[in-house]
Image (cartoon, rainbow, N blue to C red):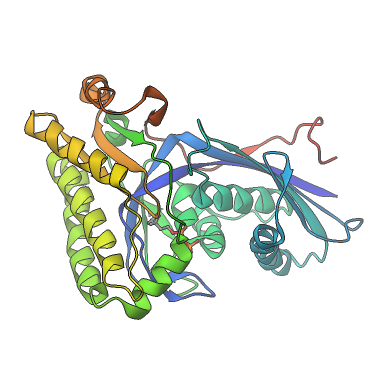
Length: 332
Ligand code: DP6
């Protein structure tokens, strides 16, 4: 039996990935840039054995549905091919998230799975090769191989991976406060949402050209440690991404009335002189980017509007870590 274990942290895109050129290889329509965070992560143990008769996937101790297991099994097929190993596998993942408010992350999950597989089968992959592999599981996962800021480059199967964005450690001065909002409406997955947008949204070409400009601004903001530019570009880019969904056919949105209230609250804090900016992904939660020095003041202000359990603070997280497989692990 071959076993491996890895931990990966989630990341939040400041320049969003929204749309694929190639669904099989998961090649994006645009470069994206993210910040890896410490508050949410996944630990995954994988074991390949000639004795297994099928792939098995448990998350937080619960055996997963056929659909979730298929996503993992498809990924395992890629790894099996790479390693020339025909054995089925058992995958045990644990998500470390403060609450179950829709924060399960495919980025940390697939990055941890890529790491655990590489370790189990002794693939000895470089960070770039791990990033390429994680990308095949879920696009955003390729950025979670790195701590701090990471940029995912569009390209071919060979050339599309994430790289570290040099920042002189600036990410250590930043915070991201999550405002957790429960989804009421039925969710459109990010996979389905971006597919529909690329295929039908008349706003999509505008998104692509604007994002190229936003990326240049973002990298300049990081190089110059310019928080205002970082925040303004983050918020504007998220709004543009969400704008594309309104022109899709049929149209949809990830915003709930509570999301709008949270965005309004952030704007109000800015009017009071606090430097904070929001971003949102394929769900109603709002994430507020600010500087550590103002984090407590901003949290205090936000807690006048949201319950304390709705507010979770994160800081910059680390890259992928390989972990020893404990003897007590359920897989042995
Ligand atoms: C809105 O990486 O979850 O969070 O590649 O289809 O698995 P797949 O999608 P996924 O999409 C993330 C979309 C996003 C923006 C981002 O993280 O860049």
